[in-house]
Each structure stands twice: as C-alpha cells, then as structure tokens.
Length: 308
Image (cartoon, rainbow, N blue to C red):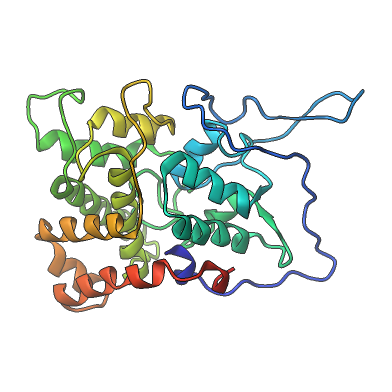
C-alpha cells in the first residue's frame, strides 16, 4: 500500500556505504516480553569484549513500534532486513505475506543508501512517507516529531469515543467503525485549524486521506473484530505501544487487504463528512473519494519486488 504512494529513491553518493549489521535477530513471539525503547538494547559482543549499548529508534507507526518493544523485531529498531520484517508481521499479526513484503520493501526503500539491504525504524519518519498531517497519535511535522507519541493529538480520539458513550468509563467503552471514522475526521479538522492559526503549510490530499483511513482500519482490524475492541486496549496500543495480550487480546486469525478495505467501506458508510473531505482533497465528490480509496486495494497486493 504505502510503497505505491512514495516517490523514487534518491541515490546517495558513491562514498556512502550501508551501515554494517552489528547483530542478528531471530523472530520469536512472546507477548509477555515487553519493555519500552532504551532498555534491552545491548548489542551482543564478540567473546571477551564488553557489550555496547545502542540508541533505540522508533517509527511513526504504533503497530511496528510494538513489535520492537516486544522484541519481535530488534528492540533497538535497527538493522531490520526484509526477511525479519516479513517474518515478524506474518508470525505476530497473521498479516498476509504479500502485504508484509510490501511493507518490508518500503522500509528498505526508505534507507538513504541506495544499496541498502536493511533499514532502521526511524528511516520511515520522513514527512508524507508513512508519517502525515492529521495522524491519530502524532503531532504534525510542523510542530513535533512523528516518532513520538503525542497525548494531545490522541486525546481527540479518546474524546470522540467518550462523547459517544456518556457516563461510561474507558473500561466499558468499545470501538466501532462509525465512531472511529468520526475520530479520524476530528483529527483532520484539528490539524487543519492548527496549521491555519500558525500560518503553516498544511498537506492533506488524496494520499494523506488514504493513509488516514488506512491507519484507522489497521488498528481496529488488529485489535478488534469487525471494528469492535475495548477502548482500554486501544489506549494501551497507542499510549504504551504494547499489545494488550495480558488483558485478553489475541492476534487476528487473518489480516489481509480485504479486511483493510472492509474498514474503509464501513467508515465511509457512516461518515457524513465524506462529501466535505472529497472536496478538501480535490476529488470533488464522495463517489470519487470512495473509488479512489477502495481502488487502492488492487494495487496493494501486487508483487512488492516492483517497488523495492
């Protein structure tokens, strides 16, 4: 999905070399194994040498960051091969291998070294790569870092759910596609307003709309069944970048393009703001917006080697 939206890689100079791999990593799924970035990041040293510490890096995506925090990907977020990324996504989340391969190829593509065979998580933080204005859990690039969780941004999502369930605690509230769509739109409007007030350039076209719908469909497909998940789990996922296994969550049986497209369609079905958004991104009509977003599915699962 994402690799079809990005531009071509700019080759580095001949002097630039890929940073050598310093460690290997075997994918192992143990959901009770979790620690935040900065811990457990010692590189295994050669015999008779002391361990060295490496600075952890993370991406704008809570799902990918959670895999590193659970040490399913390297905990420091570095030197990730295509095989590692595919293995982690398919084993941990039951992601369709074709989708996993597209993501992995996009990660390699983000490495500034044109001959790279690995990537670090922070390499995909470039604005409008997978990070974009109106993120659910990150401040916009003009005001903050896409790698860091932003509580103020995420509070708008929580407010939408809480307003839709007055008198209920977060432990009692469950998500649904319609409310999730309203929360997504609330972030779009807040992001535009913040840029207008600060007189900053706001970027929100069809590509950003696709990514906006995509991240909501992703987290609800990952955490719930047909859009239904405890809000408590959603908070753990975004605020801690942890999968709530101890609280009862289990990985989806499958996670493929049909699941993502179902989320897009359900949000649009309940989104009375769709016509306004269509004009905002330059499509013109709600029918055009739906077609543009849903047609992405056919391209999502094409051979990722074409994008690597």
